[in-house]
Image (cartoon, rainbow, N blue to C red; front, side, top):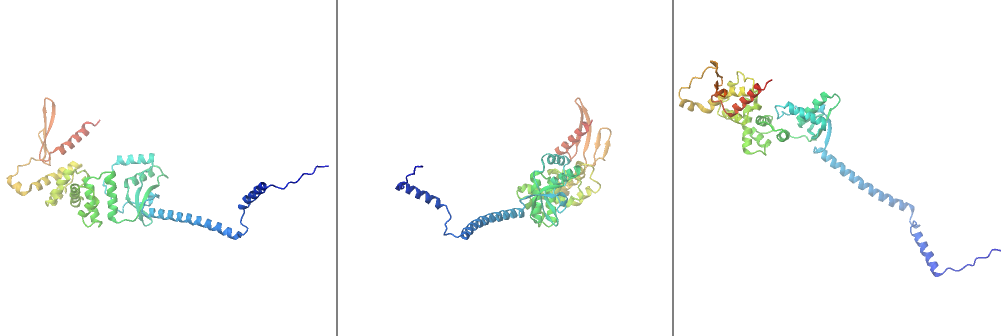
Length: 356
C-alpha cells in the first residue's frame, strides 16, 4: 500500500516568493482594461510619425536635388549630337593640332575628367565652355563608331550673353592662354553683338582681374581687329611689340595707308605680312614733320639682286654675303631689322639647314 504524502502548509517566505513571481509574470501582459482598438491606434500613430519624418527627409532631398540641378551643379551625360557650338563666336581662332591629339589620347585613356558647360537651347544645348573637349570627343567618335556619342556636361541656367562670354574667356585664360589678338578680338565681338555697351566696357568686364596695363594692351589689339581684322591673315602671330606698334599707327590715323599696304597681298608667312606693313608704320610713326626735317629722302635701291652678294628687299632691308677667315657672314641692314626679326631669321635658317 502506497505511503501517503504528508501535506505541509507553506511558510510565510514561500508565500512571498510565489506572490513576487506572480506579479512579475502579470506585469508584461496587456492591460485587460485597455481595448485592442486603442492599442492598434497607438501603434499606427507611432508608425505614421516615422513615415512623416521619412517623407520630410525625402522631400528635403528632392528640393536639394532640384536646386542643384537648377544651378547647374549636377553632371549629366548628354548626346554630343544635341550640342550646338555656333551660338557664340569662339574666343580661340586657332586650335593647335598636336594639343588636340594629346587631349584625345588623354580622354581615351582616362575618360573626360572635366565636364563641359552648356545651357538649354530649345530641344538641345548650346555650348558655353569646353569647345576643345567637345571637339576631341567628337573626333574620337569618328574614329570609334558607336562609342563616344555622349559627353559629361554641367547644364547651366540660361545666362545672359555677357555672362556667357565671360565664362568662355575665363576658361581659356586659365587652361589655354589666349594670344594678345584673341583677347582683343573677343572683346570687340562681344561689344558688337550687344553683350556690352562698348569695347572698353567689354575689356573691363571680361578681363576684370587683369592689371590696367594688360587691359590697355587688350584694347589696343581690339582696335587692330576692328580696323584690320578682315585683311590680316596671321593676326595670332603678332607679337605684343608689333601689335602695339600697329595699334599706335592706327590711332594716328594711318588706317588707309596700312590697309593699302596689304591690298596687294600679305605674303606667305607672318613675317612677310609684317614686312609689308612695317614701311607704312614707320612713315606714320615719323610723321610729316620729321620727314621734312630730313630733307630729300634718300633714293631706295630697287628690290632685287645687286651683283652676286647683295640682295635688296622690297621692305627696305638689304642682305649682303661676306666671307672672312672663320667662314661666311650675312649682314642685315635696314630700319626694319631688330632682335625679333633676327630671332625669326635664325629659326628659318635652322629649318633650312636641318632638312635631311
